[in-house]
Length: 148
Image 1 (spheres, helix red, strand yellow):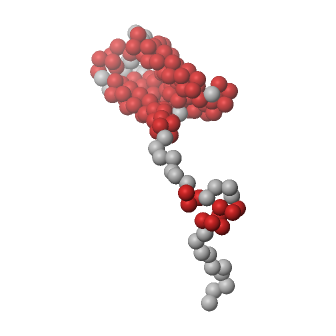
Image 2 (cartoon, rainbow, N blue to C red):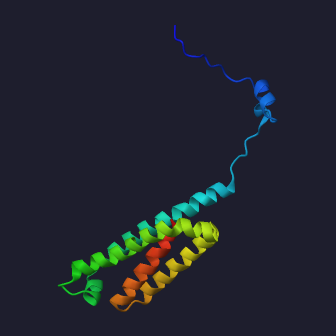
């Protein structure tokens, strides 16, 4: 025989003596909208990073885009720089997002991050030179990082 203590299921009446609530009569809360909303908002940050990187990779391979913004000498370097700027500032934004959430609340941090991401995409849309594209990637990456 083993010397281990034997455990038996707890009796609801005994538990109700120790606490003021009888756990046998507790009704489950059910599905809460706030839990789902929080999960969706948290997933949006990861979606933004993945979607933006995937969409940019497709654009970087277009011949017309390469001819307008790059030369044969700096093609690989600038393509990597465009991708790295977004990911670098996204990592920076993710690092500081906890501080901003504590300081300004999650609601306003997510709102500000969304605005930054939109401003970065406006730079990308109006970007007629490489400087605007790089600025858009920096600002958009910061917004996406704060969103995570």
